[in-house]
Length: 245
Ligand SMILES: Nc1ncnc2c1ncn2[C@@H]1O[C@H](COP(=O)(O)OP(=O)(O)OP(=O)(O)O)[C@@H](O)[C@H]1O
Ligand SMILES: [Mg+2]
Image (cartoon, rainbow, N blue to C red; front, side):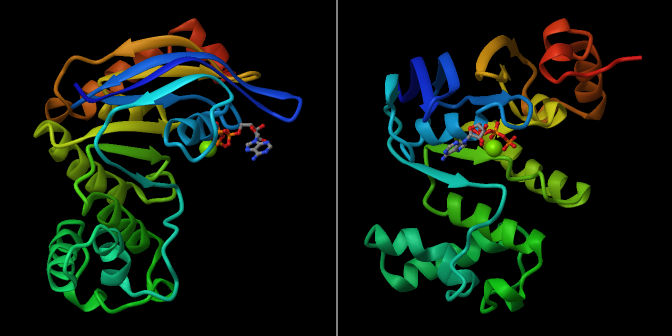
């Protein structure tokens, strides 16, 4: 079975210890989220998992057939229009231009872009539209593993919910596996099967939570209820340095 397996992973930048003894497995069809405070090493961990950074100690085994990314900022190519940005990876894989454009247009529409946006360049898109393009570009290649690094955090609540519901639809159909990095506890509860709590200095996992209800059956009540329950947890309180009155 396809999986991402992290074992005894440590990481340093210079003399700073960033991650210590990270262990987890992400199985096919699952969403694993890593939640923790800013500076805790989440992005570093994702980069190690995605092979964007060399593993120095421990191991990362990734047997997923293909992967794609979406980040906090959209990172589009400024000299390419919307459809060309989305179709890039398809063309790189050897797909015919006309076929790549057709697939890119379909997925752009699914992510809420309009036909009149197709020819626009990134400088003429709003932040939210850029993030729609970023998701479309990641998913057009139908990756079996998707790496998400806070892709919703710069979005307003309406767009956040809209993009999350498209992702939830894909999760429910078992179309994708996701490693999801966020500092937003509620977002993690809404989307993940398993949530790891990463405490800082150095980043280490202090707790794991599992959510068994299917993502498409989780409503706001479920998410708020679970958040309230989890916010009673002493590890959560100390990890986020929360002061509860
Ligand atoms: N390339 C680098 N060289 C040196 N130090 C780095 C590098 N990248 C990150 N760091 C340091 O590693 C620590 C963890 O950073 P990282 O970006 O992984 O945190 P994060 O949990 O993703 O934070 P945020 O929630 O703010 O995105 C920080 O102290 C950061 O300054
Ligand atoms: Mg980060």
